[in-house]
Length: 264
Image 1: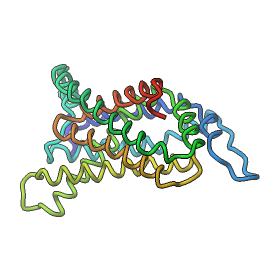
Image 2: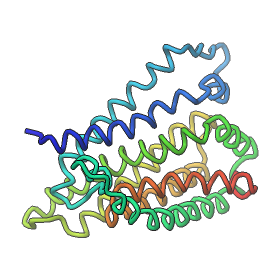
Image 3: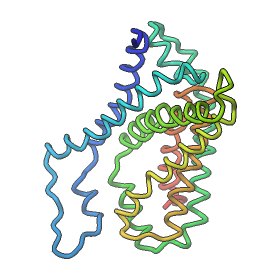
Image 4: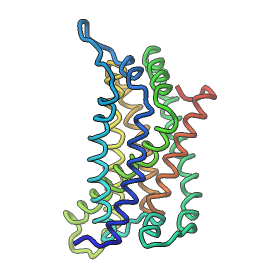
């Protein structure tokens, strides 16, 4: 039986993530699909309002599952979302959020720097047309979507849901004799979820760019995995909100670097 506290926590986190899902409505899908290479004779689909709304179903279902997994498993593991939990308990605990801002800012700088360094190393090996398409893709996805979906929804999916599940799974499979998961379980969960986070960006990149190269695969997986390791560590040591802050500000770092000509 799920307690009323857990039901409130689920609702708070789900609604926060659902705002990110809704932000996809801001994306110009027609412009996005126009970037995808099409085979001769294949027509591009017509983007209707109904199609845009239907496209929200899958991420919404995944979000609900991820939030539920986190709500059920985090108390057993010592993981938390301090601010959301304080709200679910009927408190407006601003210090619980304030204590996570500085780690989140530091994490954004470290994670953003890791992505920039990866791009500097791999960019000379990427074809000019690949770089041009990457720049166009960045312009199609609006900043609010990057902040809300990338910063909030992805952290709920990848850290609150997936990383939590992996930590629990490693603990139950290999360390059942311990009452609590050890640091090995957390490191394993961080690494696994970070790698899947990086791998999950690859299909979109390949679809848009129409080719697979070693440099492209290296950049997509290494850059995103490195950022996933940073946010996973923050979630473990400080709480979910610190990972969200880092992810949101990480996009700010990358947007700033793009305008400065330092990132694609």
